[in-house]
Amino acid sequence: MKILVIIGSPKKRGNSYQAAKKLENEMKKKGDYEFEYLFLKDANLEACKGCFNCITRGIKFCPLKDDRKTIQDKMEEADGLVMVSPVYVINITALLKNFIDRLAYLCHRPAYHGKKALVLSTTGGIGLKETLNYMEMTAEAWGYEVTDKCGLITAPWPPTPGLKKKNTKKLEKSADKFDKSLHKEKSGKMKVGFKDYMNFRIFQTVSENVKEYMPADHRFYQKKEYYVPARIGILTKILTGIMLKVAFFMMRDMGPGDEKT
Image (cartoon, rainbow, N blue to C red; front, side, top):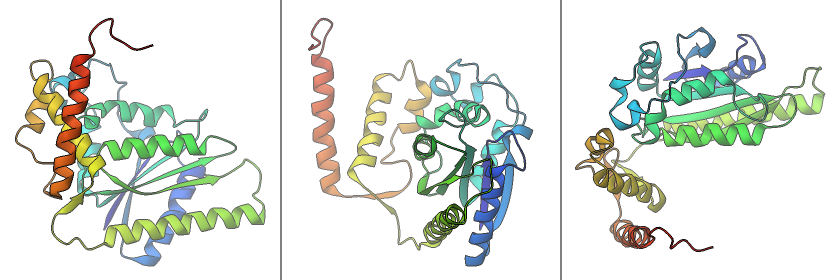
């Protein structure tokens, strides 16, 4: 299985890379894995211009022509994704943030349903929770199933035996979850729960109502039952339909000056 590791650190051999290599070693104890490392610092990625073209008209209308598509091709080819970033001021690095900004359209039109991801972060102090949560939220918005969030304390001084053991256990646990998820046998179509189906139907309904302003979304959602072939229970469909009617009725009823304070 192919695993793509996208590293947002500006340092090539820093703590984040070392943590990813240890994860690779743990994964290779469990199965036949091929790891490819992609360092964003070496990629030709221009800064997002915020033109909104990728969302409204489609990614092919992005004015920037660089390595963005090449990286996405690698994401498509890989069985799993490991997104890696050290904590920089309680968040991801600027390199990774710009890459995420360049893929803004995926939050509207996700492309990686059925694929697995793991998010990995290192810090010398605080910010692991916020950084991991942001990377998890992003990967899920792209369509990935995030199997685990692995956060390691890597202070600039030698780790104590207790901390070293704790970090090792976290890596082993994350590798085990990632491996099991990647090898989980699929029996037919994936099953979709209420929350995921509700999110899909909201985007689908909105895309129909704003098709003149966001034609790319309208083309994407038109005549789809879900992002990918899936099993959707009849009760899920009924409950979602009711909730959508209630939600959009309330939105229509809320005119200017009617806001409750």
